[in-house]
Amino acid sequence: MTSVFLPDEAATIAFAGRLAPFLRAGDCLLLDGDLGMGKSTLARALIRARFGDPELEVPSPTFTLVQVYDGEPSIWHFDLYRLSDADELIELGIDEALAEGISLIEWPDRGDGVLAKDALRLTFAEEGAGRRVRLSGGRAGELAAVLQVG
Image 1 (cartoon, rainbow, N blue to C red):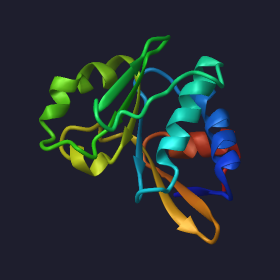
Image 2: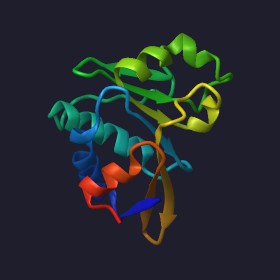
Image 3: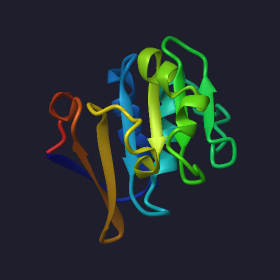
Image 4: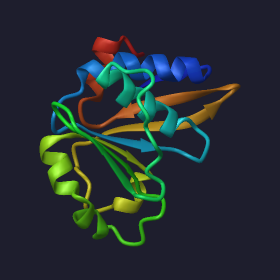
């Protein structure tokens, strides 16, 4: 397992910008951690970086459960906090997202049994005044190497 320390929001945004170009269709990022840890900040910054538009409107999928951004590949931003049953993910298009797009999934524990087993998990935890993000599963080793994450 590898990790990166993000001392503030600017570092989170910069990390997302470094990560964005290395994502490809079929990648699934599970953004795990308590409220206020920076999961949404990272997701928004990653989407903006991927589309090359720092002003792109990226609304929270808290109430819609999913926001889809058309591109090559598309990006699917899921927030499962309000999900009542993991089977609802099928109705939200998780199969298409996992097969054809890049999936960013906040509160992945609510989708147990439906989410990709080979997903990249980013676990956010408070550390001092900042956050430590641990990368595990999926392409963690490969991405840590290209991002020079220790």
